[in-house]
Length: 328
Ligand code: G7M
Image (cartoon, rainbow, N blue to C red):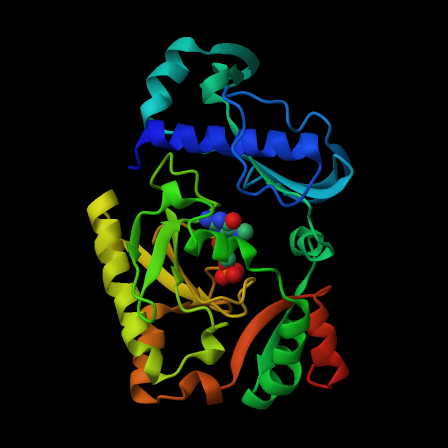
């Protein structure tokens, strides 16, 4: 596991950074370092306007609102119960009986505060696209031909896609540099491997890392040809080795894949624990890196020429474009 004290320091820096941003209400302070002190009430001024979605099963809620007069989306997520916390949960919690029947009883258990954590992910200032991304909406499966990509998808993503500034900040070591697990600095074949921000690194069950290529001109799976095979093979091999070394997790326990469509059009590869049903790991969106490599080995232009399927949410602007073009 990643070093816990280093992780705490990262959390502290992230919290201080947010606190500063709230005070200054400005958007360009991504790399500021806050004052010391590991607690903040940076979210106390948050005014919630709408619940975008929630899930009792996943213990998450996505809230839209205002933070220091700026649009913000906040994700709250109860963190998993860790095995190493069990002893303390049983010894140090208080219990309130809810019901008893025969051999069955249920309680509301109040664990010590440090074991009762909620992970908060803050996007501020959030764009309209962020708000839409987290709104619960039905999805439709789209079939995109190579021609559709050129005439519909590419013009749309060139105008509408999310900024990849956060990706450049990682590659330029302006953000998250202390979280980097492995880097191959080669400009063509290299990449940075680091925890996805969905993973708090406190337990292995939901292990989630991401490899981000140093090459900046590969938008997605659609751009890949056989000339990218050395890059993809390098990511697969060195990514697996780094994860085995750091987390003792062998390749046979990992799901390594790309999204199509991705949210961010700068090539990146997802590494998740096989048993973990990560969001977006279903067949209609995830493409195993090993399959991608084999497909390009058999046909150098596989992803330039094939029809690709992907889900789009009802309110996605790209879906409207496909509808207007009579493709749905
Ligand atoms: O393939 P797709 O574009 O859908 O996935 C992007 C991935 O990037 C998601 O799994 C996000 O959780 C992750 N991600 C997004 N942002 C903005 C960040 C970030 O700032 N830092 C890190 N480490 N991961 C991010």
